[in-house]
Image 1 (cartoon, rainbow, N blue to C red):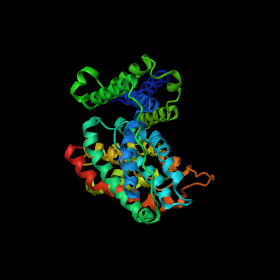
Image 2 (image 1 turned 135 degrees about the horizontal axis):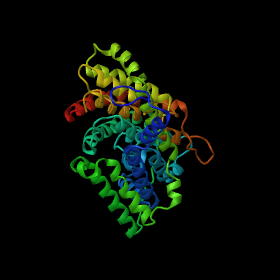
Image 3 (image 1 turned 90 degrees about the vertical axis):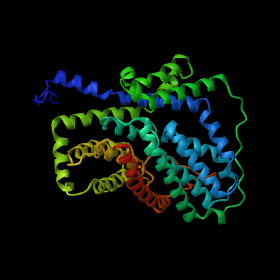
Length: 418
């Protein structure tokens, strides 16, 4: 570790230790904890499930309509309860449908895969929908507002879902191979005072996150706002210590370690060295061409390793390269990379990289939704999906989403000023 005073003095061990631990618990970690608290409350009191069943009950019995409705529900659920919990919720909701389908039904595979791919897409929908988005925010200076994020991500999510929906309809042709589907019934359970309180706190917290830049002098950072749901839910007993222990602490520790690693790589000068070599290779390319090259690279890497790990490795490099370009757009590159397993161009590029991490979905190991989907079994213990299903549909879906992010997403990010 070296000092930040411009002299690059090597810090002694006690000072380096304090610096690295202070770096690990950054405001974005509090944002992650706040997101987990919201997700836990919405799931524990069946609010997410109730809202999902209301939507699915309107889908009717046509396979194509049922597929699209489930995909949209998976994306919206991923937006608020993370794309780790969303597919688990959605897979539980479709069990009545799966039980009525014949063995080896193409629609069963189509429906499960559609939910998995839509959950991956949902990982780019909000800053708290996936860990890679949190990592992207840490690497974007200044960080994007929630309104800016929604302006870019929501149109991309909608377009991506429709493209993937058409791909799955073409691949599995469920309309011609599926008997009558039983409609999902909406929940008739009465609304409780606890559910009203949870929804109120969630809405209030999200509103503050969206307006955080307007109250920056009051809150300082959106991580402070994340204390609201933590105090409201744990202070009133709505969430308990068991719920706290059930947080995805492995993801939190991974994010903290990644932030610390990024700081160490930056302070040592290694990040600058790597970025300089990459900059020499792309210096004659336009911002759009640089974005496309990095997007393809991120999709390939995130397909074979965890989206989160890919973000930890790539986003700091992308941001540094972006800031070093003659026409700097670091935030744009970072965001694009995040949305693919997602404010200058490469700084803004970090935002793009984040999106690309979520778009990588070509293998069962490409992300949490795919891992959950490959483990789905019928009543005989036979898996619905195979690796071939992901290769035939997940790889084309990744390519199509990448093209959307590097075209439509690029235009939206430039409009925002990334």
